[in-house]
Length: 333
Image 1 (cartoon, rainbow, N blue to C red):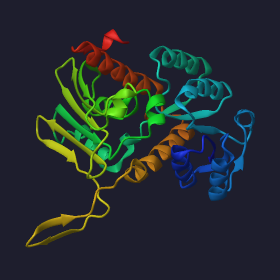
Image 2: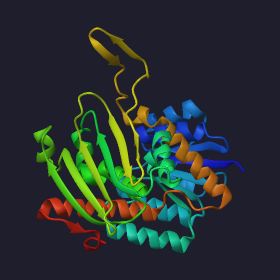
Image 3: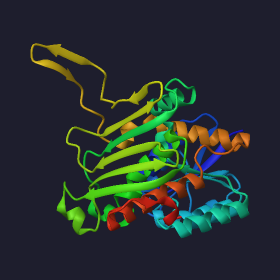
C-alpha cells in the first residue's frame, strides 16, 4: 500500500523529510503546509506536491500520514488533532518541552488509538544500527558502559536557542535516547555538569554550551555523554559500547575515506560538518521504518514513550546542574 504524506512545516528539517518521503518506496508526498509561501513553494517545486493549509490537510481524504516539522510548542496539539482525524503521525522531537503536556498528549493518542512515531533519527544511522546489532547478537556480551560523544561545529542562532528549551532538551535529548537504546535498561540516576565555555552570549540567554552527563541504571550500567556547541574540526559523532566480552564503536564520518600518507604524516578529509549531511541515510531509514510500521500494523520503532523518557532525562539533568547533585529519574517523572 502506498502511504500518502503531508508535511507540516517547510523549514530546514521539513525539507529533509520531504526528500526522505519522496525517495522512499511505498511513500508519496501529496501536500506541504507552511505559512511562509516561499518555503512551501520550494518544496512544491522540488517534489510536485500541493500547497495546503493545515486545516485542509486534516480534512484531506488523500492524506494518510503527516510529518510534523513545525515549532515545538505546536507539536502536541497537532499530534492530538491528526490522530483524532485518523491519520498516522511522524513528529520531530520533542513532543513538547513540558513533561505534563507530553503525558497529556500520550493519553490523548491512546484514546484516539493513534499511530505516532517520534523522530529520533540517530537510531536509524547505519553505523549506529551496526553498534546495536553487535549488542543484540551477543558479540560483545553484556553491556557495561556506553560512551557517547556529540559535538556540534558551532552554535545555532540566538533566536533558536531562546525557543529550543536549552541544550539538554534540544541537543543532548538525542543522546539520552541513544543511551536508553544502547543500555537496554531504563536509567535510574542522572548526574550532570554544565558550563558556558564557547560563547558568553549563550549564557546570557540562560543556556549552556558545554555539558557532560553520567547516567546509571538500577543494575549499575553507565552511560557517559559529552556535548559541546563548538568543535572547530567538524561535526563530531562517536559511540563506544563496552561489554563483558568486548567492545564495539562507531567512528566519525569524513567527506570521503581517502587517507594520504607521506613524510609529513597522515592526512584525511574533513569531517562532515552538519547534521543534514551526516544523517542523510538515517532520515531516509526512519521514514522507511515509519511506512513499514503503518502498513504492517506493527508498533513504530520510536514512540511517544521514548519521547517522554528522553525529555525526563533532560529535566533530571537540568535539576542536577541547578542543585549540584545526582538526581533520581523518579523525582521528575
